[in-house]
Length: 257
Image (tube, rainbow, N blue to C red):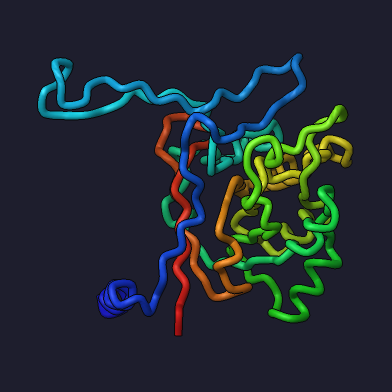
């Protein structure tokens, strides 16, 4: 109990800072847009049931409706066809200890500022490792692009040929899987690049990660407040029976000393 007591004390004093990596979930937050022949992701909706009035004099509450993959959210292996047969692949089946782990943040913000279609490659990962050490087994790897500073139409960045946003190449994901990462996270609306359908395989972050039983996090923010290494990520999705994903509140613990 000494370790946990020390952690609680350090959080209380600010020696360990809690960084919220989550966007506020509201009806205006952008959701991914698929080609019109496919089913679409529903936006978040909140309906007031009562507000200390004739509908309920002493309480206020809401009905919610949303897609599992709305706002800052978690992708379970069962979200993608490659992970549909992964054991314990739905959100309610994932062991809780699998949702907490060390964080490696790869800063791609300069590249993404220069090119909306910036691609994270194995070379970028190896350059990061040369500076910070090899990505450890069981790490969350987050791709910092500062894309979360955008909003509205600029966030989705749609053009006639679809969305344009940064993401990883297939070989970058393969290298991360060689490192046995826990999961991969981005600041964009998906873990793949906006033009990720043109890779082989299409949408490699989804296809390769989930086929290997790994997790995805997207629509993150405040990655510029995390160090390259040393933080701990806590990312538990809602425990939805058979759920393929879930909105969640992603927290990082950062040692200020």
